[in-house]
Image (cartoon, rainbow, N blue to C red; front, top):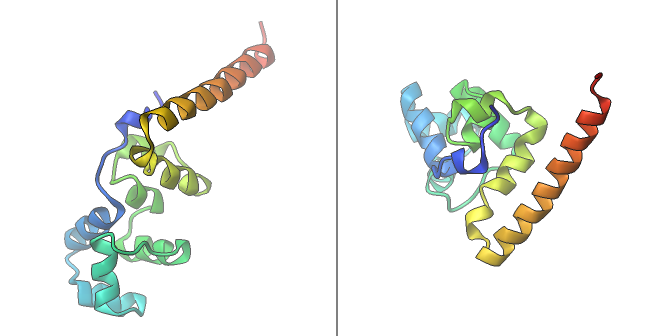
Length: 129
């Protein structure tokens, strides 16, 4: 089963980076040195004051030995295994949904529902009977 949007945890990107850095046994200063940035940059990522650029996020993931997707979704295994690196932008968008008003979320549900219905119909028509 593909996970629903509701399955996406609320753990922020910064908290997730911090979690995996600590699990790896790295101090902020050590990670900063590996990545060629200041310790204050790492601290700002981990407190969500700034977001790393995509290329930097890929370096962070490599340093922590976790997929980028896992950082973006808070380590939720089911979703991470169902995504490709191309889906990173989509996951980033999904993490912004809580910021939308109820009306905007309803509109988003209509749009996504329509797309998924269209996709399912096309799949049904393509499948042999």
